[in-house]
Amino acid sequence: MSATSREHPVFAAVDLGATSGRVITGRVGPDSLVLSEACRFPNTPVRLPDGLRWDVPALYQGMLDGLREAARGGPVASVGVDTWAVDYGLLDADGALLGIPFHYRDGRNAPAADAVLADVGARELYGVSGLQHLPFNTLFQLAAHRSGAQWAAARTVLLIPDLLVYWLSGAVGAEVTNASTTGLLDARTGNWSDALIGRLGLRRSLFPPLREPGAAAGTVLPHVVEYTGLPPGTPVTTVASHDTASAVAAVPATEPGFAYVSCGTWSLAGLELDAPVLTEESRAANFTNERGVDGTVRYLRNIMGMWLLEECRRSWLSRGVPADLAGLLGEAARARPFAAVIDPDDPLFLAPGDMPARIDTVLARTGQPLPDGPGGYVRCVLESLALAHRRTLRQAARLAGREPTRVHLVGGGARNALLCQWTADATGLPVTAGPAEATALGNVLVQARAHGLLGDLTDLRRLVARTQELRHYSPGGDGKAWDRAADRLDAACA
Image (cartoon, rainbow, N blue to C red):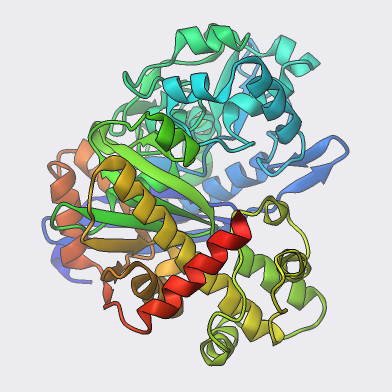
């Protein structure tokens, strides 16, 4: 690192994913954007007698440990927090957390979703929120929660990143990109839908004022200063707290007309629009309209992503089967193409468990042969994900009246050359892969902009394109074979 770059301000990004958390520091200058990992820690859910929960106190401690390491490296200009979406904590009248937050993969959600839809109806919900139907959307989780003693004592609902910001700074608010995943935000106005909240029998007073990315969220509290060594008065800056919104903000697009896939535990595939698409056809196709930075709309659909591969690896390792990722990818490259394909969004794949056995169940149900060894399973998963990316992006283009000319694949999946190449082959579009650390980059860039270092969203993206390692994949292979595989998948899903 040059002496000049060492003089650039440092921003600390707390970035929590579904399986791990980390604190990343980013130095930002006019032509410099350098990330360093200060700390990484596991995110391990706990199964309690009443359900699957997030160990949020452990995540908070990991965050403080990471901020302490970041502070040891020199002055930190501000701190920002992003996490996954939909999950929340309840606070009582004293601001204390009521219980340990539920995990979105907990089994309580599906019955509650059915009950809400029977009462309100999917069309009415979509007409307000424009949100993809997923059984763990926040409004369904709240419906499952509202019959208990905690609900009666609750005075505030805070989504997970807002809860962590509250513990850091004492400031209460709801960041808008994450609030848009609750199903309770009006997709047209960007405000809480008082009418829908009332229609669902929820208390409007539970939902705090909305904050935009870049807004100030107070300064770190004295106990944080004491533990971490951050200077008193260190700002906490609101970022795009839904990790996908941060990742999309860091897409290195230098021209309009792009599609994106934010690929990690989930694949979030779609387009960036100026306004939501709230048609009945869009609802039937299960597309979501979530808020992005600067009032943009992330028009996308969730696809079960690298979760499938990681659960396969976990199952193999538990049985003593070698599951080194590089070795598995080498076996997958040599395995027979299109031997079997699955719908990654089959509900059977949602909960943790023996993923290879579940794939076997789906293949038996659809009359397909079982994969040949671990490499065959990995090829099945990656080809199926590429097909899901193709199907979703083509549907998004048709429903939104846009024709993308390039796919930007960001997040951890950008390191997977097979998935990137097969996404290019399947979609027939060039793929730019990277940055792998898009979420942390988006977090840092929004902080830097809030402190006057950068301009509009285009400026943020150009800086990413100039400074980060990117790889480019051109479509190739047998296009007709991908067409036939897509037809097989459509038939299996019918």
